[in-house]
View 1 (cartoon, rainbow, N blue to C red):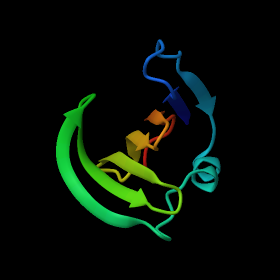
View 2 (view 1 turned 60 degrees about the vertical axis):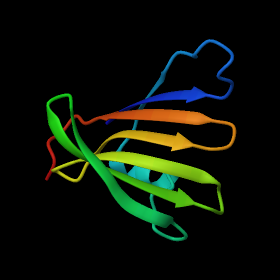
View 3 (view 1 turned 180 degrees about the vertical axis):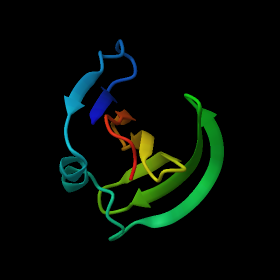
Length: 102
């Protein structure tokens, strides 16, 4: 899969260029904070259509890491877009899959 990541640490400066990473689903899950341990305020906050896909938007908060997450999830249960907010960072991720969902 291709993950396009944009990290903004200082909104008073120009937005940096996105970084592209190629990795497997296993590598992504291993390195990300998607585990339900410690997540609070988990809720479905909306639905939208993006890039021709119907998506549901799930949000949650990890108090131990002080990170708020919003995930745009397709009907195939894949994450297509993510926004993470910390006290000093705004992280935007777009996911592009090279194989169809199973």
